[in-house]
Image 1 (cartoon, one colour):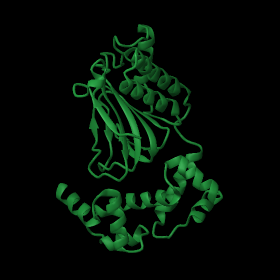
Image 2 (cartoon, helix red, strand yellow; image 1 turned 180 degrees about the vertical axis):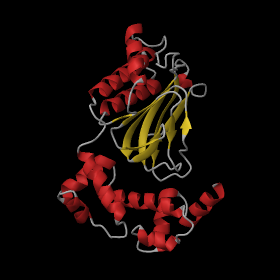
Image 3 (cartoon, rainbow, N blue to C red; image 1 turned 90 degrees about the vertical axis):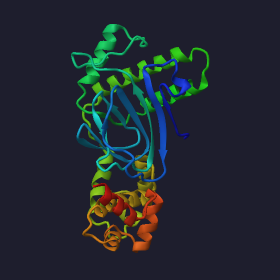
Image 4 (cartoon, helix red, strand yellow; image 1 turned 45 degrees about the vertical axis):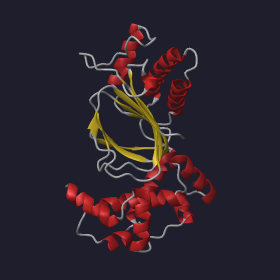
Length: 295
């Protein structure tokens, strides 16, 4: 996947689309610290998770996001990470210049092919949404990919095609919202419980066989499910949990780096330091010092 960020006023690809404030795709190969602080935005942001697992806070509530999830961020809603941490994975997004009306609802602009009544109905449903996360929604990812292809392709009729695709994205999101009877998951709930068990005893040297047994699967099926679910192999899935927990512990100056290394399942402080730097770009001591200076 190619990374890019197109911004209105800076990118010629968006010159004909004043309602497209930003279109982008990001593939994050390492944990980035201080890269995702909580902020509020105008317009609507729509994110689609392609790979990985992300922990974001949306309007002061914590959400865990997985591949296939769509995040709908309404005007003025704060979003980001509690600790400014951006995890490993990839996602794509679009930022639409759609503002709230006086009645609190949103209304697509003149670019939209929706009738006034349809636009008002969709805007009302989006504004009244009780959950900003739509799970298992791969169609949204396909639409966002098509928008990007049209923006870079510049084939005949691409302006009309892109506006049509934006309408389609809003329609499909609204329909998916009405069909999503509950925000919970079926299969991933098993992995949420698995993660709880792993975090409770990270010092244990977990094997793939042991993790598979915890959820009642064979190793082959377990490996396939973890890869499908998180985008990682079981071992890398576990390593990300270890690093996530270590980041929290490093913010406590009363715990030594060696103790953190052993408590989170690393063989030694050197093994911990090497893995931490590979995934974050910092040695554990550097991360701790930066955190203490920025407090």
